[in-house]
Image 1 (cartoon, rainbow, N blue to C red):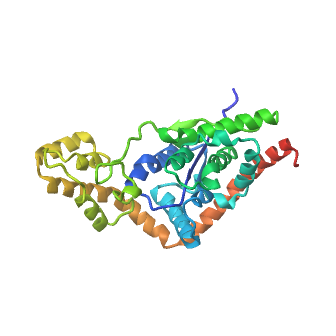
Image 2: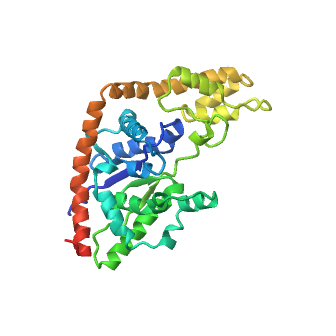
Image 3: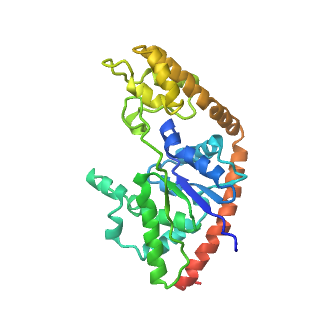
Length: 321
């Protein structure tokens, strides 16, 4: 029996901010788990800087956030010997294929996108990049024939857009060159609470940074909002269960009923013990940004080979080659 072709895993992250533990447990950890669970798959981790341009319009910030995200990827365990890490802007096929897709995608269809509807509801002056981002995202996905696209349930629409655009291109140009992608829904991902009990988010200023120093962890944890009406501080507990099995936590919290300071100190110890190895790895990578740039350059060469071949197929089908 013929062997099955290797799977292709793809994910992209915008270089717009430093990650917090909500980003890690909500997505980044799953990237590493999937990388390690599929040793024979091709893995592409994209720093989608052109998507980031919708949010960051300062050259120095873009350069800094981009290299920082590459270092973050490496620090959490994305292995450049197993995975291809590269900048979207270094593979011109992404924007070229997006333009080709633009010619077959309608405005009413794009107006159904969540990001557009959210911006419209807030009466924002919407730029074309925000309106058009699903098309560029479709190009990101379809260039690599991706099989495994890890997303949360709220991001499923991103992959559905790519699927619809692939179907339309294949139909309009009477071909089958684009694989129909399927989302890999990270079903075990829950909402990571912030220090105020709401969803952890930079916009709420309620985060614990992923690579925080012990002092920063101490300050954040001691700022967790507690409810004095109960013996168990649930905001503390809900963050704590990310770092220790609930069976152990129940005994700890039972033994320290009403002792909020002691429980916060226990959380500080557990968060720091978890973050410290990644923080130290990150510091080592940050000492040699030249090597990080070489990883990105090598990643771009690898990505360009696959992306250029797929783009050439598409250009032949539309009659420009």
